[in-house]
Length: 271
Ligand SMILES: [Zn+2]
Image (cartoon, rainbow, N blue to C red):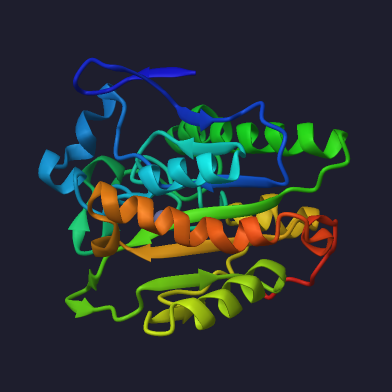
């Protein structure tokens, strides 16, 4: 599915890598892009704002792509800005289409209603949000048919400064109640990266009802984890490669860990 952006470039709504590779792992990236279809006129925002964390997660496309190569597994990335619609929110979440973000008013979203039958909301859900989630479901279903229960790794990045406050966490491990992947990461990081400031469900909680991992991981009993990297640590290609290796290492060490690739249901703590 294609749309045209403000520069007249035709864009695929989603980006995938290694789509047909059979693997125990699946990587997803909800906020990989800052692009917006031409008809939205950048939602009334300056290009400068669209190049910041408000529009997307800086550096994650590169980290996730390297990670997919290390793990030789499929990667699904959204290719539209979260300001158009945020794939990592439930359909009824009031922050699905943001009207204000980090103090900036998103003019092109101001008339959107939260109710389900708002026609513009419906359009964005059907034309963008669902396309992304359907692709993730398609790849998971292909695996399930072969009796493979993939562990899902979701890659995000966060701004070091939010609402004027500095964030000290460098790497956040966000999770709900399935501790299979988080335990592996906590023990690996505590051993190998003792000086790194690791957040346990920080800088925010991963316990969010109907977010991407809730839908595709928790509900299906698939092991899952959301990794948040502070943006200033992945600003250039060398650092992006380093972080992808850091994330790949504990996963590669556990690629034969049967415990990770079983269907197992954990009761969610999401609100
Ligand atoms: Zn994100």
